[in-house]
View 1 (cartoon, chains in turn green, blue):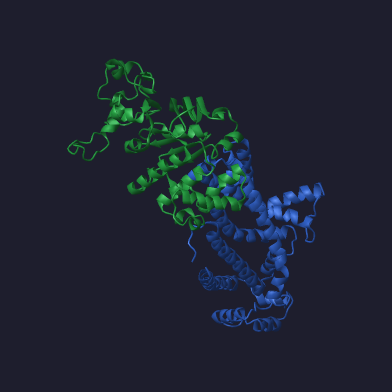
View 2 (tube, chains in turn yellow, orange):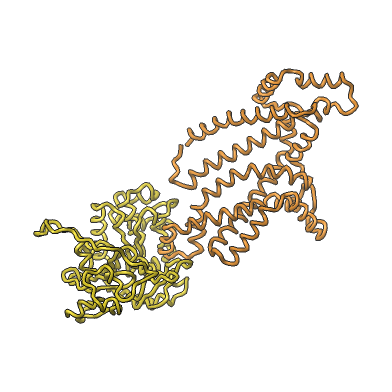
Length: 327
Length: 306
């Protein structure tokens, strides 16, 4: 599936909210038909990364200070002016949000909200946009789409709302879908359905997908590539298969230890929690950012922040002195 | 929906009953003799007594109120003590002028106020925002009579652009409308700004931007409709105050409306006339608020009908 030049290539992205460096030098790329998962706890900078790519960091709060965000055919998005960036949003990148209720405008009908990007980017008439919105609703598995298109958001269930948001994101057939925890606010059974929908859409449309989540089970389900973020930096990245099977960073290892596994001889295994919390981004410790919570920390971890160390040629990289020493 | 409207209209009756009773009591309990006033300063005691009988002022208070209510139900607001013409005719004759003034002032307040508030909210803490803030502080604190005289002095006396008083052409309407509407421009600007700032921080605004809408369209289409409910509420609340302001403005600009009619009535202790005017104002306020409540369900589909 993954071939050719990347659809999205992020290089050295840095985003600050005042003195807080929420995203501190993040790089990754994703190709057509490929899914990249960004994993991390709250406050790790994964949502800020997504909003930075979209150019939607609120002006009053913060800004992207460095790096490039290259989108195939559009060049570096950071160099675009407001109008050109507005053209990219919704047309080249479709975004799906965490809370499907608050992400939809309560006073507009579902159909008109889904059709709006088509009217803005493709110049469709109100009627054409509405007809297309009904088709899109059918495509994302909403039953009786013609009626639902006339409903208001509060009349739909959570799962249906998220399907509507997804329909809105894919309306203009974007090259990239950016999904910020799209399953987090949903019931587990609905989560599985929405994940299946994403996989299905990707197969059919061949889009590149950046999927932000804190749930490693989701990663195992859909990711081709994975970026593990901690306190604003990527601590480990690579092919999802490799990272999940053989995590090289103690944080990734800790995250994997937190996932409950049924059967597979692991029934008596106790669930591990990573002690402590993510350090405040306003007052990061010297050295490795994960040091205070790391069971293996040693002297060097306090002195020097480990760089992203690359291993092999397949994009596998990690940020840990320990693994370097062992390698 | 129809049931709901019928219910709301039915609820108006006790409200207006209470208003009529309150007005009746206040006007009959304040010192001064309306009959003596109506008869004139040199009238003989017999004449005054005659007027008292004629208007039923010699009856016990509860009985006067009963008669008054009975007449209202038949659409009879009584006769003016002074002109001897039916109060209802007087009100109907003066009503267009007041509705014209109040309507234009409200329109002015809503359109200009909301536009200023929205523009300010688009760039919070910018120069435009500060300018709007300063202007609204000024608008809210300037007393109507002072503002009216100031405008009259500048635009009529000094520049001679606009007529200082009276009613007739659109030019006559300008100064009274501005004087009456300006404090509400300020209020609407402030509320529109703060409501818009709340709305603009909502998730669906981010969604709208993620769809590729330009900021202008996000603000004027996606945000403003969501800010409309609190603004419409304000409209209901301020319509009453605006009518109160009209009494003063009509007096300043010699605007031949209900406000002046009522002020004259108060000075003359023309009880029937004043009662009629207040009852009319109360009915207008109550009806506007009913319309406002009905508008909610049109503006926000989440508010259940009925």
